[in-house]
Amino acid sequence: MGRMATNTVGVPRQQERPRSRHEGEQEAAPRGLAWLLALTGAAGVLASWVITLDKFLLLEDPDFKPACSLNPVVSCGSVMQSEQAAAFGFPNPLLGLVAYAVVVCVGAGLLAGARYRGWFWLGLNAGTVFGVGFCSWLMVQSLYGINALCLWCCLAWVATLLMFWAVTAHNVRTGVLPAPGPVRGFFTEFGWAPPALHIGVIGMLVLTRWWDFWTG
Image (cartoon, rainbow, N blue to C red):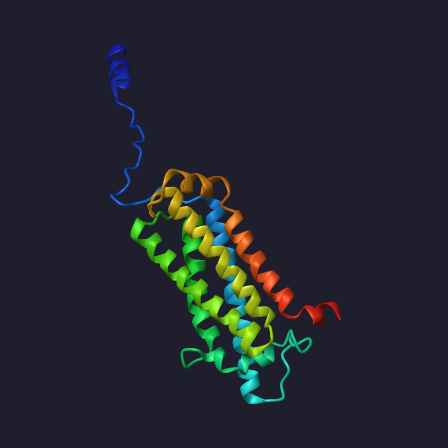
């Protein structure tokens, strides 16, 4: 009996060992960032999908009026029928359907516990830089070339700006993007400030561009 007890006590218990990270793999991203990417990506997919459907209807019937064509300024139809709406030779929302869907997948992966390497975050950051640049060009064209706004386009602009600043702030905080200590501290404490300022500037441009119309 005593011998059996001794053998039982002597059996080593299996202990959980912490998983070691592969070289270059980052710490798990905050869930807030994961949700932001998933939601902004979904908003971009929604905007691109609605614009694509309306574009097909416009091709079938040139007299079709999209639901978001509310007045001479907020006129989605005018934007969809412009040359800028097919900057690469095909309707811009087709590009958005693919790009925003990728962002949704990245956000969903993070929510599921995925950890991406530094090069992946840099690639995502580069993609959002392109997105912000393209949206900025479209914004200037809408305000000063087409002279009309598309509400669904505005949703895609805001979604792109939010994801760009969120990914940039994450990369600076984690050292993927080298930055001085004060810059890392700024993005840690005031990461909300750059996107708020960016969106505020766009809002002011829209307000002042058609000031007479808004106040008339």
